[in-house]
Each structure stands twice: as structure tokens, then as C-alpha cells.
Length: 170
Image (tube, rainbow, N blue to C red; front, side, top):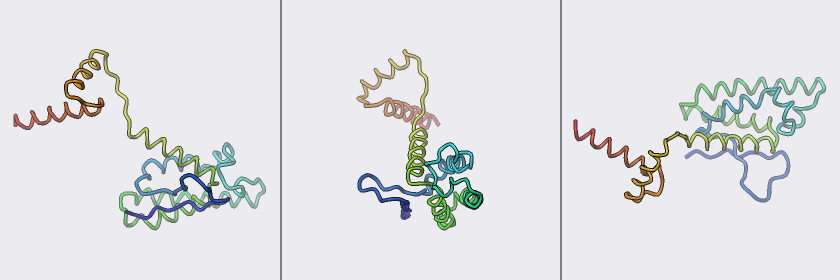
């Protein structure tokens, strides 16, 4: 397993709680669209505390620095997106992207990015389907007879039975 890249805090390191981590290969599919949306300069105006103070300042010298950081971040994101499937080639560009993200977001901002990413991961794991009440009742009876603890287990068992019977027929 690859070493996780830790967030380098801009302020004081927290004394309790989980340490922030930068992006990992497994998160890229969900993280890249989120990062693209959040790094946009318009987003900086909406969430000023999410970004480093020097990127928010309005004087022209700081404004050009903000543009430079944004301009350098976009090709890194594009490169990581292209290499996403090849883990060996991805290591160095991902590390470089993470360093750039660390110099773009504030500690609070990265914590909020991680929170949004966590919510996206949870949504990816769940799906909601609508079933009529009579099917749910039948499924609950099946669960009681088979001593299943969840709908997932019961449905998985039903699907396994169907697949097994189809294999026997062939």
C-alpha cells in the first residue's frame, strides 16, 4: 500500500482529532471534479476562509500570484486525470498536485474539501430504489424465514439462487 501524503498545516497543528490527508489515488475519480469546481477564482470570492490569505488579497501583485497558482494547478489536475489508471506513473504527479493543493487551500478549506469528498464517497456506496409495499412485505417474510439481518443480505441471497439455477439449466 502506498504511503498517505499528510497535509502540512499552515497554522498550528491540531492537538486532537484526525490529521488531514491529501488526495490518494483511490479518491481521484470523485476528487478531481470537486477540486476543479472549488479552485475556480469565483469560488474564492464565495469562500474566502477556505483559501490562503495571500491568494485572497485584492492588490494587483497578489492578484497575479493568485492567477499563477490557479494556472499552475489546472495542468497538474489534467495530468493526474490522464494518468489516473496507471498507478506507477501517477505517483510523482499526484505528489506534485498535492503540494500545490496544500499551498492553495487553508487548513479550514482543506478540512471542508475532505468533508465534501467524504460525503461524495458515502453517496457512491448507497443507492435508493423504490419498491411497492407488497414486495417489501414479501421480502421481510423472506428475511425472517432465512434469518437475514438486512435487505442487502436477503436480496443478495435471492440473486445468488437465481444465478445458481440459471447455471444448472445450462
